[in-house]
Image: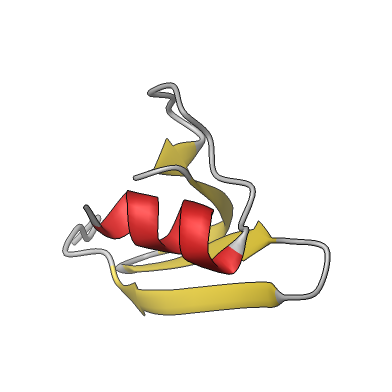
Length: 58
């Protein structure tokens, strides 16, 4: 449901297929030790989401 809201109501171009380069349709633009940044865009909006990935190399 969340993907539908972002894709259809906000017009974001989210991937419809599973990939190692995406999370729930959002493109993984950067990642580091324990963090991740996701990006999505539409014709009028650019969204960046960052957070704790829950994965650490330590």
